Amino acid sequence: MRKTCLMILLLVLNIPAIALVRSASAAADPPDQGVETETAATEGLLPVPEYSGDWKNREFLSGDWGGTRGKWADKGLTFDFHWLQVGQGIVSGGVEEDWAYVTNLDYYINLDLMRMNVLPGALIAFRGQSRFGATVNGETGLLLPVNTYSYFPFTTELDDDVPFTITELNYTQFLTDQFGLLLGKVTTMKTSNEFAGGEGRTQFMNFQLSYSGVFGQVVPYSTLAAAAVWLPSPKAAVTTMFMNTTDASTSSGFGDIGDGITWWNSVDYQYRAGRLPGGGTVGFAFAFDGDFARIGGIYIDPGLGISLEKKSQAWAGSWSAWQYVYLKGDPPELIDPTDGRQDLEGLGVFWDLGLADESTNPTSFSVAAGLSGRGMIPRRGNDTYGLGYFYNDLQDPRSIALSELEGSAQGLEVYYNLAIAQSIAFSLDFQWTQSAVREIDDAIMLGARLNIRF
Image (cartoon, rainbow, N blue to C red; front, side, top):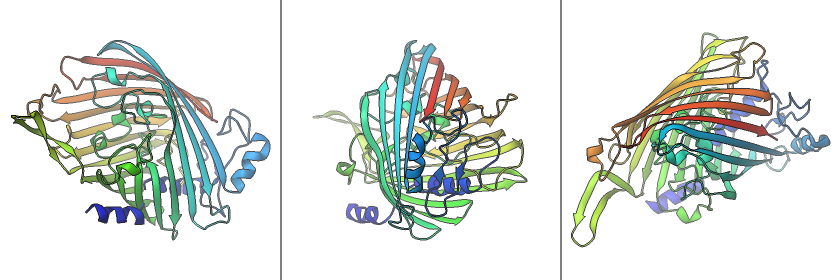
């Protein structure tokens, strides 16, 4: 089985291909309501970003570098640099009341080999990340982080500094306009949800309002993967992917081959309810050849003491969806739900329903839902906001060996994102979370984020 799966890993490929194609489609028909626009690409796989303009209205704060950046992009080479700073504190409850500050740096490089006239339909993508500082993620009583973006890159010790690591390096090859392959190292947190897909950086901070909590055990953040994507229409995408189950945020990932494989399948779709855009993702992950502790599986070995029974398989699935309920102006034919922002002025709803293997996953059922939008205040058409709630049904504490878990956990988050400029955003965040651990009080947290895109 291992040899067969390794062969498949060499033949097939990943989710970012969906974002790639949809970004290009959205750029070809951009909305006219104050969002960033890019010129349509006629000779390349990716659109060419627009770097010019005054500092308040251009997408990148550092601009065009005297025309050099635009010339490089025309030839297929693009650079992107993000700087996120987060201050967050527990003002009541949790393990202890405390404040923390952390900064994240992201470095993106894309080589559009089609635009370079090297190879049609080909792209090389690179992403490097750095993290410095501390978070309150370990002090809340939840199983998953309240500051999602700063939880990654994943490290064995929580909040370890990461001076620099490569979390993505992959090769994409589209064989036709509707079918593409990708091979290499990828990150998996980017989701196709217009109102809850910002990876914790630009929309909701809480993990369970950014990504389905049931996947935390079987889908790693950064890992080696191979996938194929089929685009039956401009409004649909089907992806199948094999990846290592072990996270490789700070390693190459090659040493993890054979230690467990996750098979991911998803269907992304968009539609119109009248004139109002909507869409969603149905996803399913099956992990095998792994090493998962069986919940309730405890036995006493006279010579070894207490041990946990193991299972080699686990699964999880979810349905994530979004729908605009009010719009100002006419929407474009397609929007990009993977870009981590509300693309249109208006109001919408979102939800996520998740199920997981009860024999291996502490979270057997999860639900998240809320309201989100853009342009609530006059003359503040680029400001965004959101209100979200999540609930996790945890396994019966009596069935989990030596566990101190409660039977459920829930939380509420509210944020308001102030667009200082097209490339600079400052947001305020409030969270209330019910502890998943007995004897830890519910936590109330306040936070602030500063996002700058250079």
